[in-house]
Length: 202
View 1 (cartoon, rainbow, N blue to C red):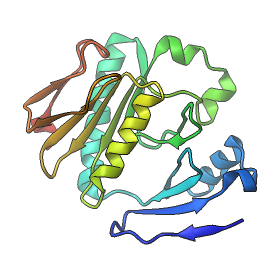
View 2 (spheres, rainbow, N blue to C red; view 1 turned 120 degrees about the horizontal axis):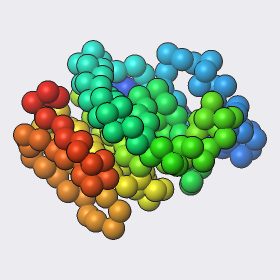
View 3 (spheres, one colour; view 1 turned 120 degrees about the vertical axis):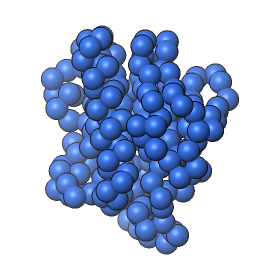
View 4 (cartoon, rainbow, N blue to C red; view 1 turned 180 degrees about the vertical axis):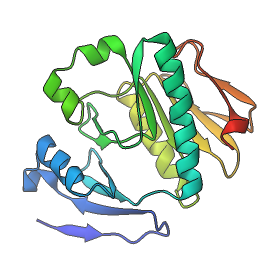
């Protein structure tokens, strides 16, 4: 089995090329790997590349907590789905194992999963995903990840770039849309009534 560590300018993310087919790593084994390294956020691409992400800086963590808080408050009020934080892993249809910074799944889709599937990394792509760019994140990499979510079933995706105060919006069969320093952003009609004030995030 060959392994290759590639250096990048980003200190936050260290990709490791890993042939998981050769290793025979199952979803359960990957789940156990993540559980054994709780201080790290691990993702696995559809091509078998293990992504090791160190903990975020304090400001990014604060922004992430705010976004998750507002999403959870809306979800509890409407009672039509479940909100998940950045430590939650999902197995996408293409085999990638991803952990969005925040996400939401419709209740009826969640209810179709078995209890065992819910306990591990659920084999489902969230309906709504959020990624938050930190200071050392490469924007193009995050944009590729957002497209992957949409290609695997997400109905709406938001990518926040606090440094430049931009919000990138992703939807099926539509080009990427960039909003420059918007005051608010709405998730209608995918998440009816969910609106985020960006002054609370920037």
